[in-house]
Length: 155
Image (cartoon, rainbow, N blue to C red; front, side, top):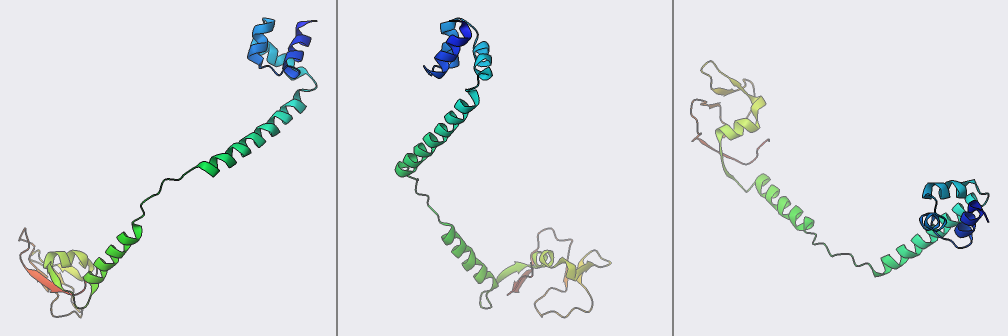
């Protein structure tokens, strides 16, 4: 029996791996691969192995998911959302008021102000605003000390 026939017999009948066949017949693994690929049975055998592999993988996955225990995840996103909502309601509430510096108010509503000749921020002419909106803000003071008591910020 020549080497090619022996290789084909070991591969198709004994179902040995190419590496083991190469060691037994004393040839390279590349040569074994070439001999196998030239045989008529190669494509049919390859497809059969592929189908068997798919079935084996499907069975493995079924067993895996039967026994797999997913770790419980603490989901506190609802509580975080509720806390944020309560904070927003408190900030925008008609009854809730807190102090805000004039400078901070101007930063939130910058389009309503312009710089006057002294370099201070002044309210744009023609705007109708409430009594508690600052008309001018002195920009020479580094830390604003004037406080603005407001109900809504248009940030």
